[in-house]
Amino acid sequence: MINLFGIAKAFIALLIAVSMTFGLIASSHAQLVTVGAGTGILGLPDPNNQVDTPTDGTTDQSRQNLDQDFTATLGPGTYEGAVWTYQAGQTGSVIPYIAFSTGADSYEILAVGTQVDVDSSGLNVDVTVLFGGSPFTLTSSTEIFGGIVNPTVAGSQNPIWTNLNSGNTVDHDNNADGNLSPAVVGGTVDGFGHANLARSYAFSIDVVPEPSTGLMITVLSGLAVFVMRRR
Image (cartoon, rainbow, N blue to C red; front, side, top):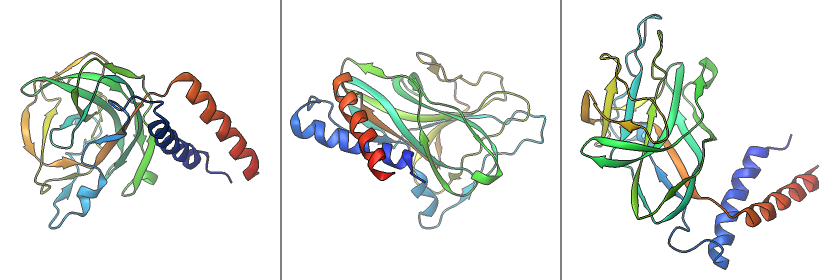
């Protein structure tokens, strides 16, 4: 069986490398960056890996977590979330997003990814999926952040592992007050019940420049030829 997802990821990397080499993407934003601590935090020395409070099936234990330390700065340009990687320790649904700071413990969302529904087969393994969502444009140099949020419904719980001994911090909130900030492009994320909480969550988001239409056609054509040759 042909691993189309693996091939697609390889072509994304090839696209960026070729574009940087030939100047097809301006040097001010010819970069792939990653936000979020990543799953590697679960293997740090002396970890204290836990999951957020599980639901009893009726209570809403949804969470909002925005990584404050594993950030990236992008120059002016148009970008998109490529893939996001996570490791889950319990079942539940989670939505990734990309944001920028608008003040102390306050953010605005730039892009929202596709919701992932984690079942028992997806626990305790690194999972990488397409981010989804729409491109976003920056008009000046901007520090971006990665965040995750859960649907606010009865029985909701956050599936993503956290390391309480990571040495880093997140802005953290639960839905006890019924005011968990939803993941909406242009929406504000604030009102954290636990700002600057000492921990990291096991997820990361890769962000890439949005390729030009012509370049994408070239790459997709190459991908089609590559797949046909593999058959």
